[in-house]
Length: 259
Length: 257
Image (cartoon, rainbow over all chains, first blue to last red; front, side, top):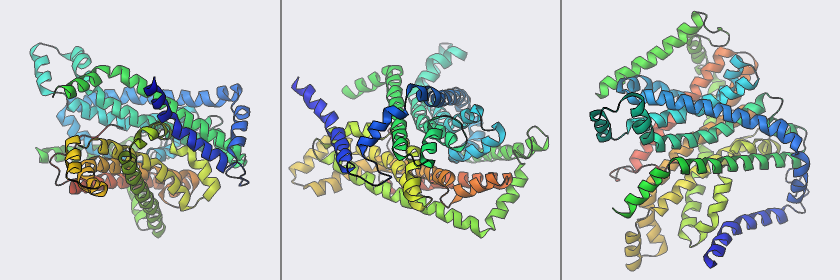
C-alpha cells in the first residue's frame, strides 16, 4: 500500500507541479499570445463539442489510419522481399536510402499535383512518408533472421508461406515494430501538415483557422487536442506492441536472468 | 563482394533514373506533373548557378545546426542530471512520456504568432522535436552503467563529477551518439517543414514558391536537394559516431524508440 501511494506521488507530482506553475504564471497574463490557462480550459468544452469531434477529429483520424495501414502493409511486404534476396537488396539499397532521406513533408506539394487536394492526397502523403522506416526496418529484420533457424527450417522442409508465417516474420517483428513506432510520429506530423496546406476539415485545418482569426485561446485548445491525440496513440501503440511481442520481451527477460 | 554490391547499387540507381526519364516520355504520367529526369537535372543545374539558392541552403543549414546544437546540449545535460539525482528519474518519467509524443508541428501556429516567419520559429520546432531523441537515449545510456563499476568508483572515493566523467559518460556515449544521429535527421525534417509551412527563409520556402508559381521541374530539383542533404547528414552523423566510438569495440545495439 505504501509503495503504491509512493509510486502514485512519483507519477503525478511533477505534472501537477508543471500545470500549477502554468496556471499561476499565466493567471494575470495580459499577453494576447499566452492567455491564462483558466481561459484556455474554459474555452475547451465550447470549442471541442461533439459536433466538431465528428466533423474534424474523425476525418483526421480516418486519414491517419488509412495512410498508416497502407504504409504498414506495403512496407512489410516489399521489405520482406527485399530483405530475403541479397541481390535485390544490393540493387535497391542506394535508391531506398535516398528516398528515405527526403524529408517527408516536401512530398505534400508533389502529391498535391497528382492527387489534387482531397482525401486521396492526404492518405497518399501519410502513406508515402510512413512507408520508409517500416520498409527499411523490415529489410534489416528479415536480413538478421538466425541462419541456424533458417537451415533447420529448410531441413525440416518448412518452406513458402509457412516459413514466412512461422519463422521469418516473427523473427523480424521486433525490428518491424521499431519501424512502425517511428512511422507513427511521422504519420501524425504528415496528417497535420497536409491539413494545414489544403483542407476543409481536420484538426490541422481547424488550428490554422483559429490562428489566422487570432482566436488564441481556441488555438491553444487545438494544440492541447493534438498533444492528447499523440499521447493516446502512443499508449495504444505500446499496448499493441506489448501484446504482440509478449513472447519476445519474455524471452529477453529470461535470458537476462540466467546469463 | 563489396565491389559487386556497389556495382549492383549503381545499376539500381541508373535504372531508377532511366525509369524517371521514360515514364513521362512514354506518356504514362503527364509531363507537367512529373517531368523527365533530364529536365529535373537541368533545373538542378540552374539552381546551382543561382545565388539565391545558396542563400536558402545556408538559411536551412543555419536553422538545422543551431537547433540541433541547442537540442543536443539540453538533452545531454538534462538527461545526465535527471539520472544522477536520486528519485528525479522516477518523478519525471510520466511527464516525459506525456510530452514526447506531442507532435512538434502542433507548435507551428504558436510559432507563427510569436515570431512570424523568422528563424526563431523554425528553431522552436527543431529544438522541440530533436530534444526528445537525445534525452531518451541519454536516459537509456546512463541506465546501462555497470553497477559494479559504479560501486568500485564509489569505494575508491571518486566524487560525483569524476564518476560522471570516467564511469557514466563512456557508458552512455554510444547511446548518446545514436540519439544525436536520430536527432540530426529529425532536425532537418522539421527545419524544412517549418520553412515550407511558415515561410521562414530557406529551402522549404523555395519549394513553396516553386509550387505556387507552377515551376514543377524546379520544385523536383529542390526536393532532390533536400534528399541529398538528408543523405549527407546521415552519412556525416554515422562517420562522427564511428570516430567518437573508435575506442568502443562494438557499437552497441540501438534502443528502439
